[in-house]
Amino acid sequence: MNIGIVCYPTFGGSGVVATELGISLAARGHKIHFITYNRPIRLGLFSENVFFHEVRTKDYPLFDFIPYESALASMMVDVARYHNLDLFHVHYAVPHASVAYLAKQILKDAGMNVPVITTLHGTDITLVGKNPAYEPVVRFSIQHSDGVTAVSNFLKEATIENFGVGQDSRVIYNFVDTERFKRQDKDHFRKMVTTGGQKILVHASNFRKVKRIKDIILIFAKVREQMPVKLLMVGDGPERTGAEELCRELNLCDDIIFLGSQSAVEEIFSIGDLFLIPSENESFGLSALEAMACGMPVIASNAGGLPELVINGEVGYTSAVGDVADMAKNALSLLQDEEKWQQFSERARALASTFSPELIVDQYEAYYKEIVGAFQPVS
Ligand code: GMT
Image (cartoon, rainbow, N blue to C red; front, side):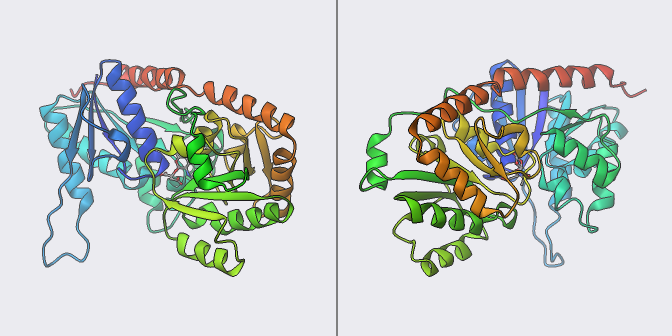
């Protein structure tokens, strides 16, 4: 198939899933056209069957806000026409689902029928999309997508509850390449971080409010009262400054390292002993899945879809949002018991392997065939 993928090109989970999906589909022989404003972060170098179409906007003195949506819709129309697209797969509803609806109507007018599949990722439903500024548009564009997928059962239910639509949506979980994300020998790297064999806690995200970054520092502080540990903070975003201030206040700066945005996260995950993800809300938790593939047990909140992945007492522990005392207690129970940690680590890796690209990309491919097959040509 010729598939147009629309996504955010940034470090966010939706862009990562969209990019990895496109790369896997291209390896299966599909022609993949990424349509977005920058080359997606995980796209890497040139590869066969993968094309990138940069959406260029034009500024004008009249504009306070550059109309990106119009430029994106025009580019989608252009790519569909000249590359004979069979399907648009758009990731993150805001604004991609409504822009796809517009592109589809324009193409229909020109006698071309291109179905749209929208993948809901999380905050497009639980936070941003719910805002009255976007809600009617999000509801309409989900309702008028030809196919909808959600990355967890939780997210499917939240879509039905928040918008009254999405009853027929398909749940397709995130996936991880376990060949890339596996525990590698990075002992030299561990020695750079630790001075005397301390355990290493890791967090990775885009440091938004929903991630409860300060809870991570507070959990770490409690664990550190009991044993020598280090914390690696991977990523960047609006909450980083506040987190660094808290580190200084608590006098923890020597043991917490802010690494900023990183592309080879699997190398950092290879030296981690525990992954922390105490989010306020999390539709799935791709970073937790990647950490598990690297053999890290996970300390998580029980928010959103996290319990669908972090099986409590098996591959990590889940606690109520904000219960940093419980999270620290659970972290210590793993860090202070080598045998238990080993069991959790092995089970985390084994569970992550069940979210392989082979299995999950099969599900997307089957869904594409279903939607394209059911789609009526323009009469
Ligand atoms: O929160 C992020 O890390 C980015 C965000 C996005 O939409 O770009 O991620 C969401 O999509 C990921 C991929 O499907 C999920 O694994 C994340 O759980 C989800 N984030 C939230 O729900 C907060």
